[in-house]
Image 1 (tube, helix red, strand yellow):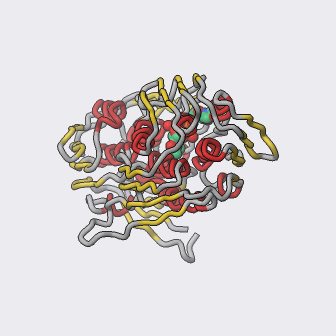
Image 2 (image 1 turned 45 degrees about the vertical axis):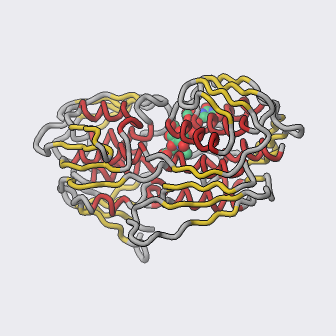
Image 3 (image 1 turned 180 degrees about the vertical axis):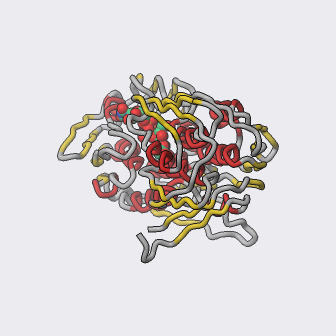
Length: 434
Ligand code: EPZ
């Protein structure tokens, strides 16, 4: 298995291009199941999760192809993919595929809406908590689906098609909002989704569905209205920028000090996180190309408390990265995780680098230290892994981060983007090493 080796101590200066959003690309790819015509997606990040999902969808009958790189195109430019589900050949999503990627459970919405049936494996637990699917089931039932759990599978049937309904989420869920919105596009009549997730990725999916002929209003707010239509058609859609990648690099620059412009992105996608970053004493400026992040390495990092919340609150997907930054703050900060039950596992690994963190329930109390020292570390999820990279960038000496496949799920050419700005970071091929 590959590792990432970092020698800490350099500031970051330069330009980092931000990729298309993983968490928008995944539901957009799944939306291709809703039509027999071609869906073209531009600015798709080159990530392991994306290629895995394409393979999973080919099981259901989706043909996909990639545009080759055009002459003169920077290899950091996103890819264009074409997806066509002319015919759904299988409405079953088996355990061995769904267990590899939780988001593939979301095929349940489009399959049920288009074919009147779906049999999708329960995804099971994952490293950041149990992550149940009760909200998906209740929402689809509100649209007339009959749902049973049989031998580890969610079996959903709507032989006469789904019908519009009203569903109020008792708890905000990004995935269940995506699924209900997709399912409602082909239902008979109007569906109203209340207490919907307001994440920019939900609004991006809605924009694509509207381009495919869907009638949706309110996506990006807590109430979404969908007027069902008999069929959707092909479209071309550009994936919005990755706000989590944006925030991650912004926090890396705050950590090391330096002056970096993040291009192809917008601060409007992550205002809350950027406000927290500005409160640490980092300069955050909206510029024509995206965002400019500047911090004098000699100035102190102020401690700032954050609590993760659904959008537009502080994102859980930036919690680990912010904690890494706080390990070097001049004082004590409190970081509270409210979205997932088990998402503080980076604490023990950050401690291996010399961080002082005490966990009490869902809150981590971080006492900033003047120095971190490099060490071998590993993490069990994507965002936790990248928090260790951020810490490694300032740790004295060498840090090696193993289980790099987590990073490859969600960060496109991470080591290249950082090394172009002056970091000493490289991938070591794992052949022969453990
Ligand atoms: C999405 O996951 C993201 N994944 C996650 O990003 C992100 O952390 C999360 O939203 C929250 O922002 C993708 O977009 C592919 P949820 P999702 O349903 O949709 C509970 C990353 O690192 N819940 O909003 O699975 C659930 O257990 C990933 O890129 C139920 O109780 O998250 C959690 O506590 C990790 N019942 C809360 O809701 C349900 O039926 C929010 O989860 C569904 C969810």
